[in-house]
Structure formats: C-alpha cells, structure tokens
Length: 255
Image 1: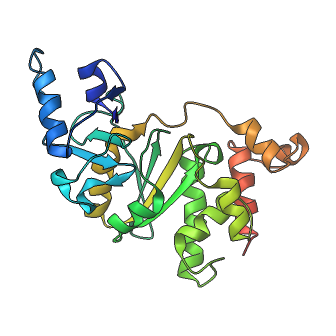
Image 2: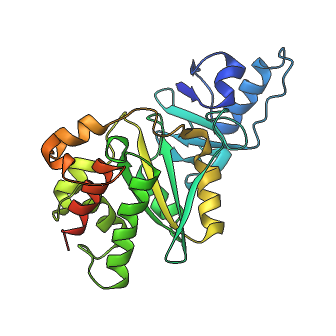
C-alpha cells in the first residue's frame, strides 16, 4: 500500500511516500513505522496524528482497528507539528460580530469540503480557488458583501457559503460559480470559515498541516482575463486597490 506522509513526518522519514505491504490494520502499520524508526534520534509521535484511508478519516471507520488492503492509500498527518513550519500568522477578522478566518490550503489536502462541513458543522465553510482571492482585504470586502446580504435578506442563494462563492465568481448562477471559483483538483485553495472562535480554532488546528503561506503569487493578470477587465475599466476606479475594488463592485451589483 502507499503511505503518504505530511508535515514533520516527511522530514522524519526523508520521504513523502512509503510503500508497505502485508499489514493487517492501522495499528499494525503504526507499530511497523515505530519499529523502523527506532534507529533515529528523534522520537516519533504517533499519538497526535490524523489517519485517512483512501481519503476517509479513520475515525469514521474503525479507528486504529480499521483493516487495510495492499491497494489502499493511507495518509498520515501530524496535528501538532508539520505544515509550513515558517508560517504561523493567521488571517482572522470580525464582520458583523462574527469571526472569519481565511486559510490557504495546499494541493495535497486529502479530504473534500463536504467532509469538513460534516465534521465542523457548527461553522459556515466555503472553499475558493486561490486564483480568485487577491489579498486579505479583497476577501474581507467580498465576505462583507455576502454577510450584509444575509443580514438584509438579499442573498443570491439560501446559504451564506454559496452566496460567498457566487460573489467571488461574480455570477448569480450557482453552477457557474462553482465551476469558476470552486476548488480544483491538485490546486491550492482557500478555506473561508465563519462562526464561533472555539470551532474556528479547532478547524485551524485540524488543517494546520496543510496551511500554506498565502498570496505568494500575484493573480491580478489572471483575474483580469477571467472577468474580461480592461485597463480602461481599471483606470476608472479611483483607489489604491483598483482591481480589488472593481471586483467588489461587480459582486455588489449582483443584488
């Protein structure tokens, strides 16, 4: 079976993947990993981890007694260490007395958005293709538009997360919004979470192994092409963040 390693485990085993056969269950796999690591100076912590089998969290299966087959793909994700060790700053802000957090998630994320929504049902979640969020302020302005619409019964859809993706995609069609600005396979994306601080913090620590440094790439040219924005249209906006503010205007007129 293929065993995919994340975070600090990649450094520990000096590999992103191991190929292991003939182990009966998760506990046997962990015992084997502990045994082959005995000659290392660092202590291998296999208590604080998430384990997914074929993209399904083992906790919703049979925990560490979950049976394994040789054609399975097992992902092992540290929840204390790992991720981008150099990136700790969180992007959080308050809108309408609600906590909002923005996290860029790397393309190796092994779960889907529906799984996260089920696991963290106490908070509102949406995933947006990284190319469609230019900055923290851009995100904050668009989310503020959606939350204003929610407060005044002007949403484009029944649920706030759906309204949010429609406004990032600048369309009043749900299917087009998902196709345009939704999560793409093997591409980085942002998770937007809205709700109580307690649950947002739990989500952050759950996703921390996959959190990347945000806004490393300037997607302004891509966004201008995607929305057919000309330099002339851009020059008509009198602000320091012309493109962001023009996108917000496009999102607002969807009311």
